[in-house]
Figure 1 (cartoon, chains in turn green, red):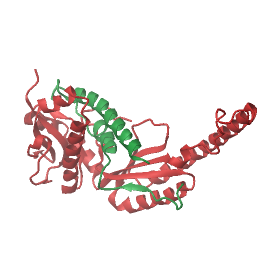
Figure 2 (cartoon, chains in turn yellow, cyan):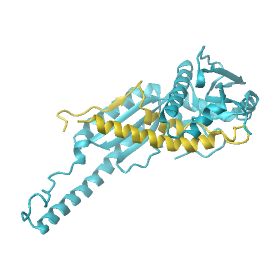
Figure 3 (tube, one colour):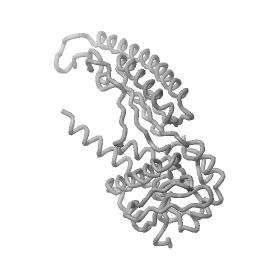
Figure 4 (cartoon, helix red, strand yellow):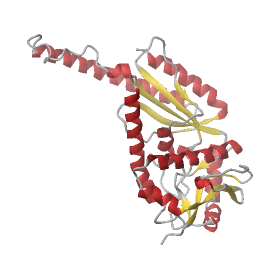
Length: 69
Length: 257
């Protein structure tokens, strides 16, 4: 229980990796069409990045739990 | 057969922007390739390097490295000029000619999109219940540790009261979260819902905020944060970000969200 009113948790400059991945994996301008490299191209990479995103979040959550008293 | 080399894209900027010398993915030198009024910030990349990400989904570090490198170049582009349109992570074109064609064909949309985000940062705001609130108030003593004490009926009544209080509280919180969103939207050029459907999030939005309005925006967020703290709610502000969530769908792909 906080004794004083908590100010907004404002994170500037340093970025949280999960927040960053949230943006760069799913947002940002996308290009589709045959100029995009196919096999190693954006769609395949993006698909697996989602899997990786979950892996990163899970590993960070585990780290948080073991770090807290 | 995929080509061995491709052009990795970070962002589109106005053609006059100069990033100076820096390196990007795989330590390749970052180039600014201009066509008319717009330019792409890009670097050469071995496609095998990115394919390795696909081959090894168990290595979050490789993704983290790529994301941080991407972000660093996008931020440099943002700092060098007034407007930046970030590309999605992992956008790779065949070659420089394909990139020039893209810039030429999309010239109008890109210029329009650059004008829209000029002088703006993206800010993310989330409202969550604080940790203290996750623990139920006056949790009934587990029956196993105190056999025979308290009847099942009393327990159920207490539990029902708790749930009713919870439902009322949830309704009140939804109203408050809507109020916060409304106040913040009024200071932003645009807003977009967050991507993650986490039921614990009362508010999750991105805002496109012009720099002159930034102070007002943050003061408003702080004011609500103090008010929400009394309700055991935490307001998180993240930023400033490059306008990832407000980059135009350059390929004509529908916007997410």
